[in-house]
Structure formats: structure tokens, C-alpha cells
Amino acid sequence: MTTISDGTTTLTPMLVLGWTPARQARTVAHPMIGRPDPDVTLRPHATRSGQLRILCADEAAAVAMEAMHASGVLLTLADDDVTSVAMTYAVTGPLGHELDPVTLVRWIVTADFTEVSP
Image (cartoon, rainbow, N blue to C red):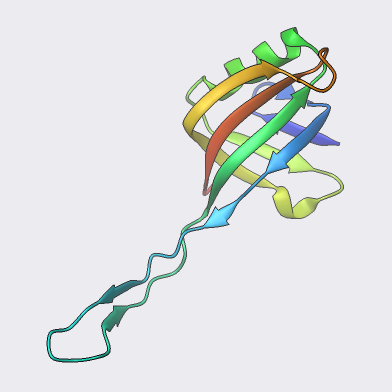
């Protein structure tokens, strides 16, 4: 079971349709005049960021899910079956909901996220 919580309220979506995390490299390569190889400043990768696509049972559930994601607080994603998705995150980009074009009954909430330290 997947849950998303703001610390006070916990919502349970039907399914996370998409979770596309990536970790941006923060290492910098500095081209050097007169040298074929760059100077490199090594840094650890950033935390995960990407997009969540959350399937909700109906429009009311999608509106509640979107409202939680729009509230400006840190959120926690947890899943009993896929523990590697567990994270605390902030919404850092577009947020919206739409009618699922396959079922025409379910709704999909889409949110860009960035993982943060809890």
C-alpha cells in the first residue's frame, strides 16, 4: 500500500502510475586553456528529483491529493511493497490533475518533486 502524508493527514492513492526520479550530477569540469584535460571539482550527486503521477479513485480524491501537494509543506511517500521509493519531498514544479483518459472515471495527479532530508 502506498501512502502520502504531510505529517497530519495521510492519503492513500489507488496507485502511483509514474515515479521518475533522477539524481543530478553536481561535479563540475573546468576547461583549461592550453590543456586537453579539464580541472574537475568533484561533488556528490543531488538528491532525487522527478515527477510523480498518482492515480486517484475519483475527482474528490484527486482534489484532496492536489491540495495536499499545493500546501507548501514537506510530504512523505511510503510504499510497503517497494521500499526504495520512500522519501520526504517538496513539490518544486508544475502540479495539476486530469481525468484518466483510459478509464474516464479515475483521476491522475501530476507533481514535480525534489527529495529533501526529513
